Image (cartoon, rainbow, N blue to C red; front, side, top):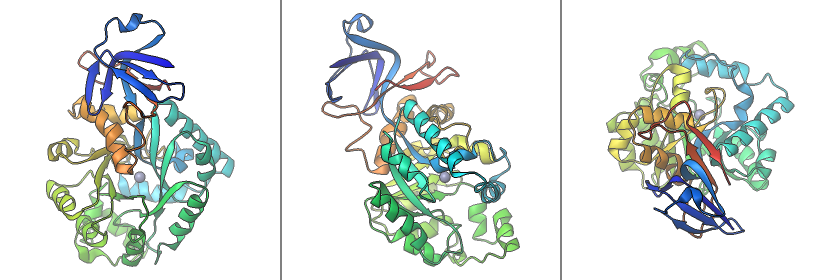
Length: 383
Ligand SMILES: [Zn+2]
């Protein structure tokens, strides 16, 4: 048996004071008590500074790009980033990639992440994931205007499933796939949702009008697009993705209230809006409109994106960035835990502190007097 206490605990969307959590020898939560007295002087009870949280969910990452840490210059804008990615992503040995991935996986775990929605373009992370304590949902991404079907991604997903991993096929975005390939990628009916990069830059919508840097780049490289007739990324999502599918939309820096309403009213499946504010800042100095999502009352989750577009894979930085936009702390914590778990469809099993459940326990410490994030705020796994 283990007894854990702290100043606060986060339970189902609210923060409570002076908790004691009792764990059985098997790590199952046997009891959660709040408003206890003398919590830092209880016998056989570990006491921690800050807030006790369940495992966090990094709802959008590309851990297989961990070897690209620092390889792409910051602030060059979205089209420049996409072009650089194509140039730098291959110049590393399998050993370098494996070591970088192992390091990222360990850091994610130690900093409290228990589940990741991870984009995969190949099989390089599959072996490591078989022995990782983190529950990965693998979105095998179809990418490239040259594809006419989803077969390349389907083959990779097949290997992952064969290795016992949770894998599904997903289209990369509304600007990087032909009609046929996109339709094929969304037609798969597994238990894994879709995870689509969406409105990360203003270029995406401009492309549908033949304007902007991305359209110019496509013209220079003689890539033809057959989807401009949809008129916008939102209309393409609505008309090409079956309404019953669960979907994660990633980034959302340039969505409007009308886009949110259009998408929310179309889907009968679960829609999750995933925000990665530090990646957006790294690539193009943009910010997702977090306050608008809060006002709309829609499901939000948080992602770190990748070490190619972020200084670290720590969720605390993303949470601090959202808090700095005025999002209340209990909402930030909800988005980082239950929001992500619901996005990945794992909320019945993971990432919730409740009697009878097995969950990791994480502390968020070093907050300021008003529970604001500071430079000293850290996440640390205690079990
Ligand atoms: Zn991404």
